[in-house]
Image 1 (cartoon, one colour):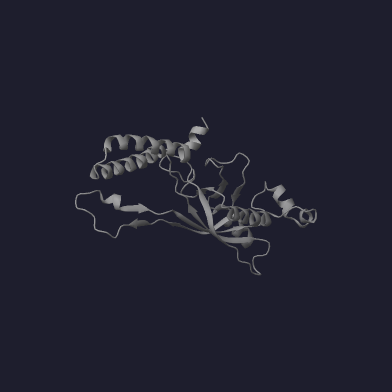
Image 2: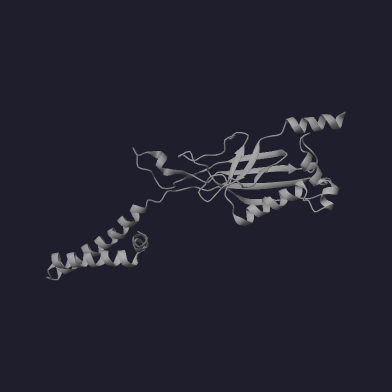
Length: 236
């Protein structure tokens, strides 16, 4: 009776935790792996701010002097070869001695392999927890990717066929790069060089206006031919 009560408590106290593979564009993979632990032992949500140590001008927006660091989520959980549901027939067969005799990997072995594979590859993952059942999102409502930063798997005589693990996941901040700004920056460098040469020519009595126009055109042509814009133009 006691063992049945313990099993029922473990089943009904199961907390939501899921990791989903993300594609290169940040969307969940259609055929990507999904990981769920059988039971969450404990979890930690960690957020912090990087606050400036320099004086802030009175009257300015103080919020601009603080930046949110990457979100950190830590978990200790268990994946067991024992059935957690009456519907896990395939899991039971694969994890049984007969299944392993025919080369089927047990549930705990698959969990071990999957977590290590994700960590070694730096695989971006969608994190779903008890308090974020739809997963973490960016300000633009896109999936916020996480990577496994650390993974610890202890073993002792009492664990049996269960796999216990502790892992830390860290969010990855996403930024958008405007391609047009690349052109502006390159031309800005050319303009700056032309203006500097104009100033030098004017101070030495040379026709600064004509030199500046020729130099600016040459610098822009060179920037387009050799700079990062050339790759953009060549693709058109």
